Image (tube, rainbow, N blue to C red):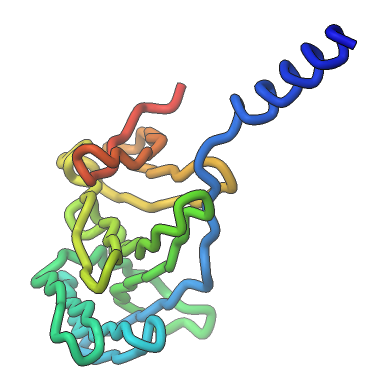
Length: 190
């Protein structure tokens, strides 16, 4: 009987020991601008709103306002750099596009809600937190490597990854939330 109880206790510990944050990403919202300006307004939830103004030309930039209903609480991100890509479409026409992606993310263990902002540039690629009626910027990819050429997120079930490319070399960082500092930290993935 003792062996059965000890075995059950060890099994229980093993099951919980390997548990880490579980991530669930919602559908991404993508805004692309081809040589010009665009404005975009959407509801993130019944109380949350996102307003975006974006320009594209030789360079790209975006202004984002995350706001909460009638409380008036908002977070404004101004002049975020947006990576501009040029090429030729399948019909032979040239294009110059700036693209912004916003992905809702929930930590299913804690219920915390985040928004991944991807502009293709390290300075514009950020993690925004929503908690208790307030938006807060918790992480910017340039904090890990400001000399990177491009940045993007990848959401796995157990890991949140940041991909940074500098001079053709790609580095992957595992991002973890630190509740003591209310920020995300990155560790180079081996």
